[in-house]
Length: 92
Picture 1 (cartoon, rainbow, N blue to C red):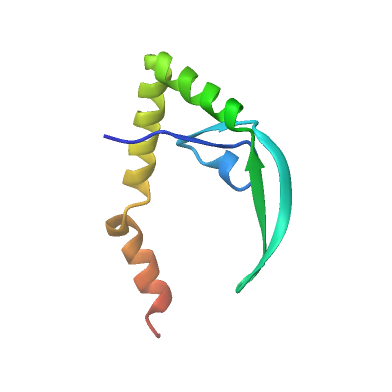
Picture 2 (picture 1 turned 60 degrees about the vertical axis):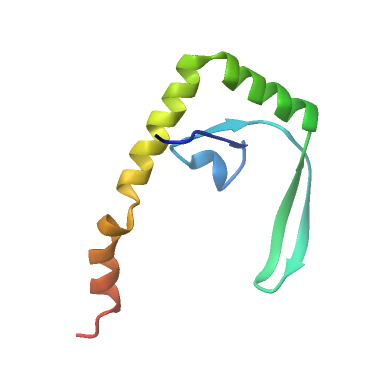
């Protein structure tokens, strides 16, 4: 069974096919990390709770997000991606 996601309605998460974007961001700041600066988003906790309540109350929506997550997982499985990576990493 797939697990649907609630994500922030901003890149890169909003483009995930198995996620339900929710506009909850109240602040964003760049935080220095080893790999460079990373945007960290702060969300409204009451808004997030309301989005979770909505998802829980709407069984059709919940099932749709589960199906989408399962479909995405099937296309992104290692068994499916391995040939492309093997070709890329194998010297000529």
